[in-house]
Image 1: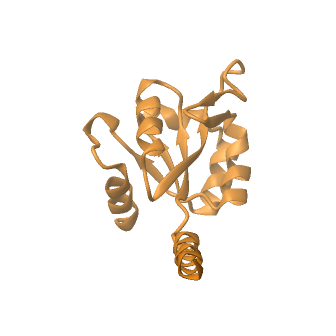
Image 2: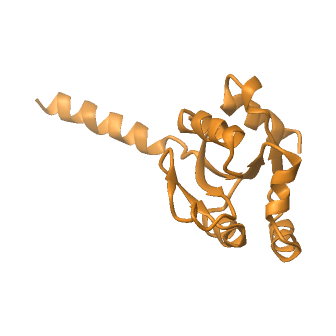
Length: 134
């Protein structure tokens, strides 16, 4: 019996040593963003901690278990969660951020990563490659 408990303790220790997924934020709430969010729900190395949209009726709702925030809340989220990347699907997505918010985001040096979700099979490897090339 002691052997079983020792084995379970060793397994629990291994699981606690696994790296936590790196936090990312998805900028936008359209079909492309939903596809990215869906891919992230199955990722091992990355997790979406927020979706960004400026429509008041979406604020505070949840998509695939992730909360929707206003663009002005992003700098605080980046700082609080040590965000690895801001993901967007279209150039227009960056228009969500006013100049003051963009200045704050640039000060954190968090990269903006453009993804084309329809061509992604393994989001972990795509994000890792894009982040390594920065």
